[in-house]
Length: 292
Image (cartoon, rainbow, N blue to C red; front, side):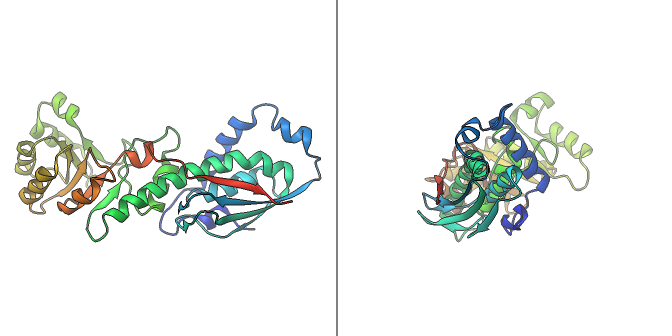
């Protein structure tokens, strides 16, 4: 029997524990206390069915391991044949999964499975669009912490399915000093000195700046590993690259859209981060069609 991990993107990791937790939470939300009363009332227990999960739009698939885990959570007798795996590009009308087994379980799993696949495929598809617009440059497209509460691991995985990269996963895996940190700590040098004194040797330090004068101050300290260039126009980004001369990594943030991403990449910055990849990605339309 095919397992959820067999459908993961070959170049990205998603913990089986995260898959199980997300599926358990989603089914608990949908089943409530009485279960699928519609299927219980209308479908005899022994009824079998076959269904296909179909892409109604072209895009990049993500979330198939969660769809499979949803089906198997409801019945061990469901058989699934996968025609693609996560990160595959599909066209409108393409069959993605063929499903057979107890009809009640398939019908009960339908919406939860489609919610996972539609949401995560939408994130992957939008990310792939950003990546395609920067082809031929060194710049990497990154997501942010602007994710759906409780679904961060899934959405960041979907970004990887689309060819993007992950910024920090939480507050605990890197130091990112923002404008409010600078204000409270008393300035760029004091905040960087405190961060460097606290950080372990494997912890990177990034600091946000709004102006080239602030960037110069960061460069003079020699204490940062990366600088986030916040809401700078193209000319200013280009000058920031010239000033830095490769001494640390530069990340553009703010105003990063499909229309602006190519010009941002052409400035020579190393990264561009966009919250839109996860907070504004449209759902990729998929359907579960019953074939009796």
